[in-house]
Length: 283
Ligand SMILES: C=C(O[C@@H]1C=C(C(=O)O)C=C[C@H]1O)C(=O)O
Image 1 (spheres, rainbow, N blue to C red):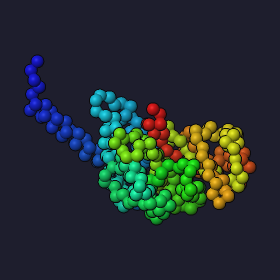
Image 2 (tube, rainbow, N blue to C red):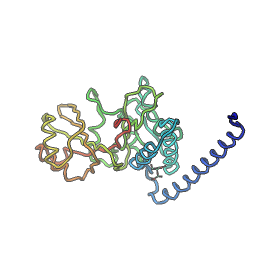
Image 3 (cartoon, rainbow, N blue to C red):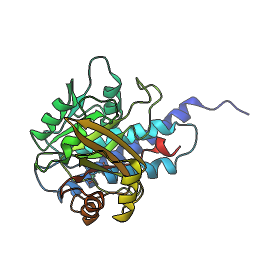
Image 4 (tube, helix red, strand yellow):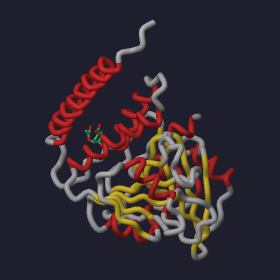
C-alpha cells in the first residue's frame, strides 16, 4: 500500500478546520438570537441546559479522541457564549493558596475567557456573589468537618442569596490538581432540571434529628429518599443538608409537609438549589 500523501491529508484537515470554525461562528449567531429573548442585565446561564448538551455529546462520542477533550472544548465554547450574553460576568472562586485544585475545577468548567477573582474563604465568595447579579461563585462542596459551612446561610430569605446550580467536576480532567475534590457553583438564578439531578434541602432544628427520623419525614412529605445527608451544629443549632433526586423549588408545598412531619416551624426546611448529577458519579 502506498504511504499516505501528507499534503492531501493536511489539506483535508484544513478543510475540516474551516468547516468547524464556520460552524462555531454559525453557533454564535444562533446564541445571539437566543440571547435576544433573555432579560437584559441578568445572568444568561442555564446550567440544566448545559448539562443536557454535555451529556448528549458524551453519550454519542466514540473513537480515539478523548471524551474529556470533547467535554472541555464544549465547556470552553458554552462559557464564552455565556460571557458574550452576560456583560460583567465574573467567577468568584474560593481558592485558599494551599488548595489550587479548586482553581482547576473552575477553569475546566468556566474556561479561559471569563474573569476569575480568587477568595480565601467561602464567605468572601458569597459576599461577591451577593454584591451583583453577574458574579458566579465556586465554593468547596460541603463536608461534615467544616468549621464555617457556607450552606446554612443559603436557607435565608434575602433576595441577594444565591442558589446552588451545579456541582464540579461534571467530568473530571486527568491532569487537574487535587483530583477527588468537588465544588458547588452558586448563582443568583433558580436551579433548573437537567433530567438527572440532586436537590439540596437545608433543615434547621433546635434539637438533633436522626437520619431515620429525616428519612421517615421525607417519605411522609411525599419527597424521595435522601441520597446523602450531612449535619453540623452551629451555635447550638443543628443544621442538616439532605440531597434528594430531582429539583425542588423553595415554594414546594412538600417542604412545609416535611417541616410538619419533623415538628419544625415553617421556614426551617429550605430548598437551597440543585445540581446535574455529574458524569463521574454515574461511572
Ligand atoms: C445559548 C444559551 O446560553 C448559554 C450558553 C449555552 C450554549 O452555548 O449552548 C447553553 C446554555 C446557556 O448557559 C442558551 O440559553 O441556550
